Image 1 (cartoon, each protein chain N blue to C red):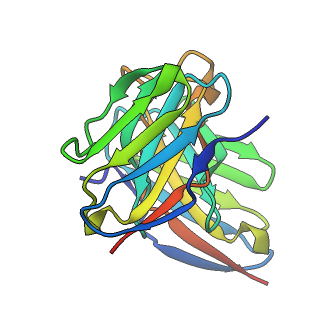
Image 2: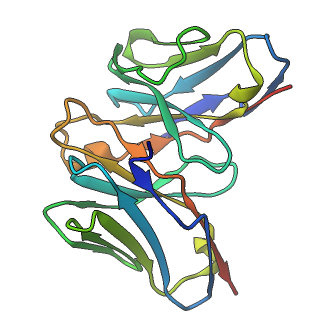
Length: 118
Length: 114
């Protein structure tokens, strides 16, 4: 079974530039998550999709961040314009979703994209 | 407001000894807990979980204990091996919530010394 794919793995941009990250979840997984992980902290949920609908985007800075999930499969997270404090690792994860048993809460993570804003 | 706390940022243990990683939570709605392990430059991977109907769950060298009254859980690794050196995240969720949101703690970096 192929894992969660993310690209790019690394990105360096200047502040006020824009950047986009791509995620391909595990086939058949209904739920897709984007997390921001700042060094020394745990992953913080930015947005959660159930199929192609948004379940939670309460911590997404909507003035600069946007995300979409195309046809309930791939997803893109965009930052425009970037700020210095956006430097972090952006993790995408997927899960089979509620109702699939206890392991529906088990999330499978991609390798992440390390973003550096200078 | 941190709902999931891991008060030890780092832990160092000798190979073969027991590693104990602690986690505290504040939200009494949480009833399902997970531990994830993360190596550098990789995403976190699921390790073990426990539901609030249990107070212990074992999987090989890994055991998680849950004390609901104290809102505390711990991960025991016995015996510890150098390959266990990683960052461990405690996470919590609630079956009673309208959706399966998981809250992560800040992590504990474990070093197992050969």
